[in-house]
Length: 329
Ligand SMILES: NC(=O)c1ccc[n+]([C@@H]2O[C@H](COP(=O)([O-])OP(=O)(O)OC[C@H]3O[C@@H](n4cnc5c(N)ncnc54)[C@H](OP(=O)(O)O)[C@@H]3O)[C@@H](O)[C@H]2O)c1
Image 1 (cartoon, rainbow, N blue to C red):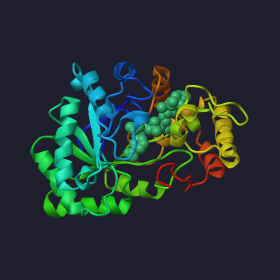
Image 2 (image 1 turned 180 degrees about the vertical axis):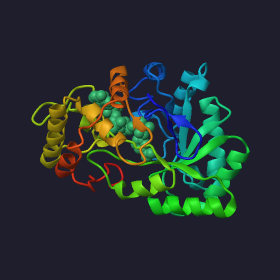
Image 3 (image 1 turned 90 degrees about the vertical axis):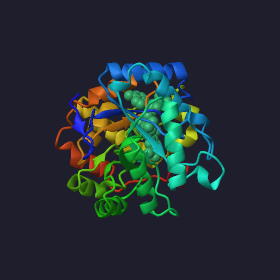
Image 4 (image 1 turned 180 degrees about the horizontal axis):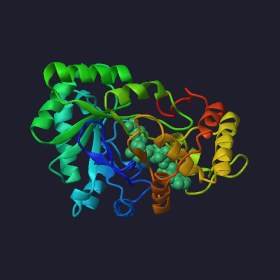
């Protein structure tokens, strides 16, 4: 896979990034370590985790840390093979300092993440969600401290819109703080509310690393109308982590799978290749339970969507298209 610059960070990443949100449960620690090693062997050099990730056992305010610990164990003897991203901001406890983007929380959590990951530096430190209370100036000043201390190499944002990224760029220039280099947003054939922001990211060299490009598995072709849910799938194991499958959703999924089969491309590869073809897209964060699923994503990096398909896709699933978030509404 050809490496791509991650925004203006100076880091070069593969077009596929391994997501770790399900590490710990349902993917056991030993299977997670096997998946990480397989991903590295397949040429993937980018791993995305978060201080809160602990798989399906997670609940709002649970302490997290499980996925970071697993990543730390997996990379112990191969740290130089991976660009490591982790996140801060989601609740890790019940108290007011256990969440958000305050200096106190960030500077405490960066140390905890470093310890669990068993590294001296985090390559990309991501603010997970916008904080409606803490001013972004406070957050950026704390990130500046973490960078000067050598604890992080670059910082990115997740779930922030273009005007928020613009404010970060403006503040960075004004105060000499580090510049935001990446934006992690939900983005798939079925979900495109951030589409209008892509041009801004191209113009300002912010690399987009989208998540849920397969929409939790809905875009892989394994869920079929009128057929039982495949056992060992997310919809069967953790239905509140995937969209409710109703008739209009099946209509869209069937239309998109039909286009993929017309092009002779497996649906999962078609979905990832389509996302990769959008402006500013740098590296697709893929969740996987099995090595074959990672192989599928890697193959997608060399798949080309027939040009006439883009408008046909838009006719089936027009932007902006968003289902209510199962957790946040
Ligand atoms: N920043 C944020 O707020 C945020 C939010 C969510 C996720 N993320 C990141 O994005 C990553 C991916 O999220 P996600 O796992 O929810 O979304 P996803 O990549 O759209 O879905 C991944 C799931 O789809 C199934 N799958 C993957 N490839 C497949 C294939 N080729 N064929 C059939 N099934 C396949 C697997 O589930 P089953 O086999 O169990 O069905 C897999 O766990 C996370 O790990 C995390 O790193 C970030």
